[in-house]
Image (cartoon, rainbow, N blue to C red):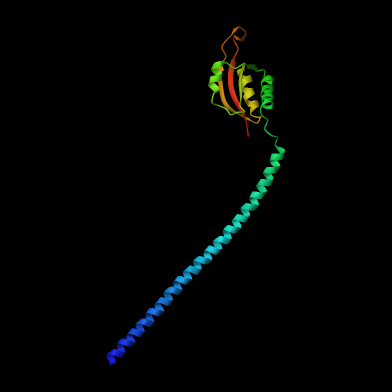
Length: 171
C-alpha cells in the first residue's frame, strides 16, 4: 500500500511542479507580450509626434510656396517669350536668320509644343553674350548648334558664327 500511496504522492508532486512551471512560463510570456505592447505604444507615440511635426512643417512650406508664387511672375509663352528672345538678339547686334530646310529637319522631334526655334548669325562673342543673357530669362535651351559662318563677301575676315537653337519656356 505504501507503494501505491508513494506513487500517488509522487504523481501529485509532479503534477504540481508541472502546473507551477506552466504558470511561470505563461507569466514570462505574458510579461514579454506586455513589454512588446509598451514598446509599440511608445513607438506609436513617437511616430505620431513626428507626423505632427512634419504636418506643421508641410503647412509652413506650403505657405512659403504660396508667397513665392505670388511674387514670381507667370512664365510667358508664345509671342511674349519670342519678343524677349529677339530683344536680346537685337541688343547684342545678332541677326535673326530665316530657318533653312536642313536646320528644320535638325530640330524635328525636339522641343515641346511651346518651343521656339531660331537661327541667328553674329560675331562669336556677341552670340556668346546672347546665350549668357538668355540665362536670365525663364527659358531653357533644348538644343543649340553653333558653326562658323560661311564666308560671303561682306563677312570676309569676320569671326562670325551661325547658331541654331530650340528654346522652351520653363514651367
